[in-house]
Amino acid sequence: MSIIKSTAPDGENISAGDGLDELEELFQNGMLRKINPSPLKSALSIKEAKLRLEEAKLNLKSGIFRSSRISCYMAFYHAARSILLRDGVQEENPHYLAPYLMKYSREGLLEEEWPELFGWMLNLHHQDLYHFQAIPSPEDAELSLSLGVDFVGRIKILLEETKSGKRAFIKQNAAERSY
Image (cartoon, rainbow, N blue to C red; front, side, top):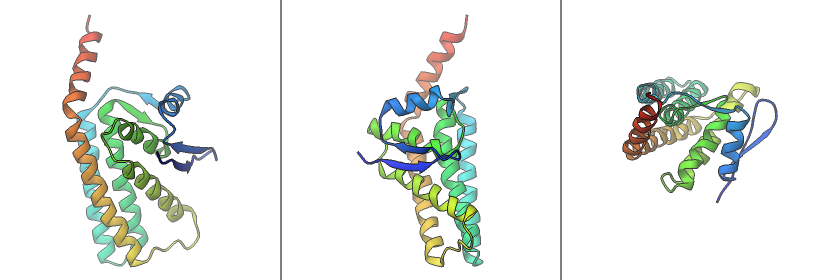
């Protein structure tokens, strides 16, 4: 199994691929927390991802390559977040999205390359925001856009493939909460 490494805002190293213990630790430390599952917010997040891809295309055509790549990152972010919103999970920081997506990889529902790709895009986004003169080339911006389209498409498939199981889980939880 591959491991995704990233750095949280506090400088702590984060890795995905270490198993369920890591996910449990993220919940225990408040980096991930349970919220009410929201298929509506999940759908809105996917819609936002698509809008960000369109924005990235326009920026690319206009020669605004860093803005294009930032828009691509936002598409990645909203697509990944749509899974959490649907599952009833809130992340404290985008760095915790890849470890959550790895849960689906461990279950055999998502190829490991997708959480890794999210980690890669998160690192590029960090460069775009905080490094001086981080100016992507036209080819870099085109690659980010192409991978963003692929990522959003794959997450939409994952949402569809796991929809019925999650709905049954949500209905079961709602039934248990009713008195």
